Length: 111
Image 1 (cartoon, rainbow, N blue to C red):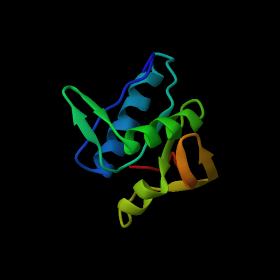
Image 2: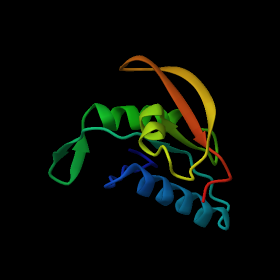
Image 3: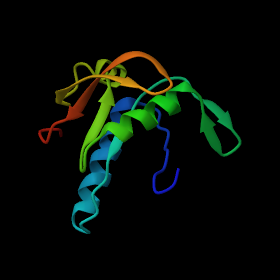
Image 4: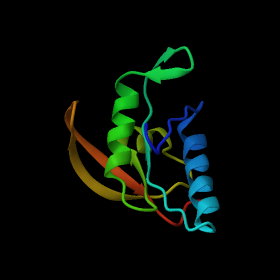
């Protein structure tokens, strides 16, 4: 993925926790990251993962601004009832992904 990477987690909330920790840890080094999160079915191919969920995640990440963590509506809906707060980031068409997707940015008020 060039200068990016893909990681898998067992829950969307753990993914969000990790994304926030990465962003925070790299601030001290003046390294700014863009993080995209989506949840869905993946295909494991040896040490790699593939499938539409991976593709969607890459597209969400590409739409993130510097220092931003963007999530799909699927992720937002999966963590309903948590203390995680989001801001609307609009509806987007993503290359190779059918339909329009609502995206949300994590706020700085996340735990």
